[in-house]
Length: 170
Ligand code: NI
Image (cartoon, rainbow, N blue to C red):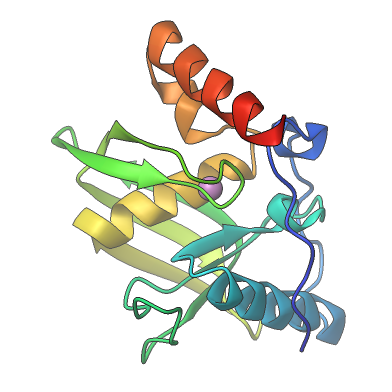
């Protein structure tokens, strides 16, 4: 496994719509393994393939990751995830993103969702998630369509975060 380079805002790969994975192969699994290692190394709870420069519909999630990036008991892999049900009820959650380092903001998300996807072995699965796990899955699935959490904010809040990010780079 390898820790991959993280792409940060405003890299244009973060705004692209990713391609569906046609066939789950050892190469797919290698990318997923590397993504998971990268996520732990950067102390994240979720990571999408475009964040490591790969334009494919792949995400990894670990909602039980430790404070220093220690793996939880149940890391999850999602290939071609699609949210097929969303609750009308929403929750607000303070979200950050490895591609927008050092920033966070309250984002409104569906409280419960149902996700259809292919697992590590290419088998079709459906997962029901709520609260924290549901928030992470919505955030990561958004990445596959070129959407960042700041795109859910008011223009004012979004611009404030972008301004702060630019200052960090200078
Ligand atoms: Ni993110």
